[in-house]
Length: 247
Image (cartoon, rainbow, N blue to C red):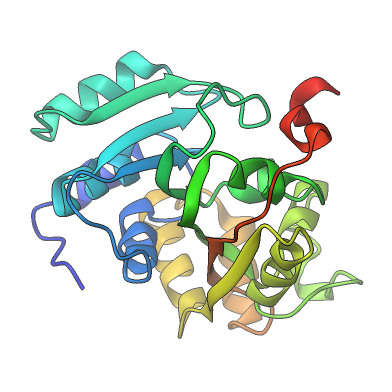
């Protein structure tokens, strides 16, 4: 795995946009993506752009850093500070109304973000439209190690309705398979991922005691880091899928 010594921890912490370490998760996910210089990659839900910067610098890929709430100018400034010379394109876009050509990207990644926009049964088919045949879609982020139907007592003080969008790696794999647009090639839960999650919270968000206490109490029974990678099949998108954003 890539040494992260040239990504200072204070830079990562001050620019993190989610509750997880974006460099750690991107590094982990990239192991399964077979990235090569010159590839076109969509980083969907890119937050501050740290994941995009990492991919551009480490693999020489062109990255579209796409996020709905992030000012693209801030992403561009951060990229300049990280000595990105070219090949990174910050955009503010809605994940449900993508402006790209079909079959355009070699890979699409979502770092700690897909649960916010991708749980719809039709979404994986829609997203796959923008991927070249045999291209890869990968997600990595905070998730579950087992599905939850009743909130465990030790998680109740932390749990909010949005957390119901968190799922296991196997749930996401099954979710993607339903569309017939993706073949699953990798499904994994990080060993001791809950510890990495806890360490990050203590470093970046020490005031978030509800989450810290939940992670300590859970000890990985329900919470952890997950990743899933799928390869686009030869499916032909239907008209309804292509107009996913219309509703």
